[in-house]
Image 1 (cartoon, helix red, strand yellow):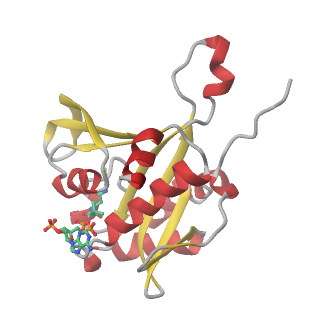
Image 2: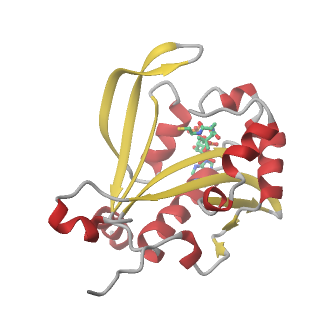
Amino acid sequence: MTVRHLPSLEDVDWPVRTERLLLRPATVADLEVTWSRWRRRPDVAQWMTNPSRELGTYLDRLGAPEKLATVMAVEHDGHLVMDLHVRVLDSYAQTDVAEQARATRANLGWSMDPEVHGRGLATEALRAALGVCFDDLGLHRVEADCFADNTASWRLMERVGMTRESHQRGDALHAELGWVDRYAYAMLDSDWQAQRHA
Ligand SMILES: CC(C)(COP(=O)(O)OP(=O)(O)OC[C@H]1O[C@@H](n2cnc3c(N)ncnc32)[C@H](O)[C@@H]1OP(=O)(O)O)[C@@H](O)C(=O)NCCC(=O)NCCS
């Protein structure tokens, strides 16, 4: 039996460049910058599912090689402005075809320096990440979710053409807001190809 190569960010021909951005694999030094510049800020941390109050906790969680390998650093004008997380996962499948469903979808996450909000840079970065997932890794489906109150994030997902597939009422517990609604968004490879050829 031929063993299928499972896609990972290591397969990508880095760096990936867009009109205004450069995307590359993140380093531990990048994690220190992202945490000190924006991830520790309450206005950013309020929307993260796993906010880290201390740098040490953040590095413990993401600094291990297998975790770091899922993080992309996004640079604008030579400065780190965003981190994008791409976790490649197996899809739901019957056991007969489970091997074919391995590493066919990704769950995405992101955070950006508020100093550069409002210029479309996150939109540009997320489009590039979708290109990595579909064109470079050959994934079938990309997903992301957010608290329904996180308007900036769901608007971002809509700008890049992801579809809101569910509005789950009161299924997410937020530390300050209590039980809140959650939105789940996704894009299929066929959506991505259709969008590119539209
Ligand atoms: C989610 C997040 C990255 C979105 O940032 P953002 O600045 O709103 O997104 P963009 O960089 O794409 O900018 C879009 C804005 O710039 C404007 N814009 C300007 N030029 C643009 C361009 N060339 N292309 C697209 N939008 C442009 C858009 O109109 C939009 O403004 P609006 O919100 O007033 O309509 C940011 O809010 C963030 O980091 N939040 C905290 C972390 C977080 O929520 N993470 C996700 C947890 S699920």
